[in-house]
Length: 213
Image 1 (tube, one colour):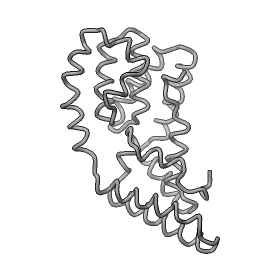
Image 2 (cartoon, helix red, strand yellow):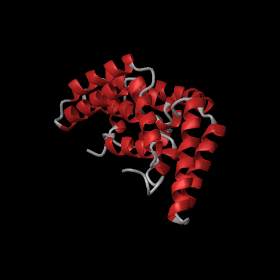
Image 3 (tube, rainbow, N blue to C red):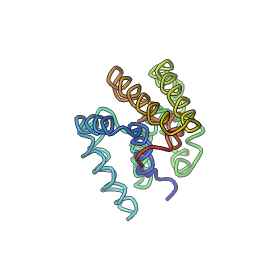
């Protein structure tokens, strides 16, 4: 079901980035997740995706609705999946509400050109959605910390240069890199762009060939 976004690959890429070889930093990354009680969050989203695979969109949607109440920060793929469930159930008003949330998570108009969003484009709610798009898009852009993203991107570039060094140098550089990342998280908190549809996410899949995964 291509229209549903699975989270396993996303979470694996996220953890690869947060746990670059350093066992100590790996413990810190899991501590951050545990403190935010996201262990239960991921358990619930996995449960929702199993319902979706079985075609049980109603139970899946109920899980997402509860999570959106309980957690201030959620992941864009879960908002996407909730939106798809609402569309499948014919709950157009709720689907448009989640579609607007997706704009605040980085979606652009072109992202709504795909299935199953076409099913709600002929509904009266969609005209209001298009009218609100520019406002919501600008609101999203105001939340993007360009300077902080640049710091993470520079760490990504640093990681890519490590592979050309000898093994002794790699160990030292990877340790330094893990420290740099942990300091950014300690200072600025969990990166916003990791929960949103951001071009940085794609870079996580190749960040550190020497990660534990």
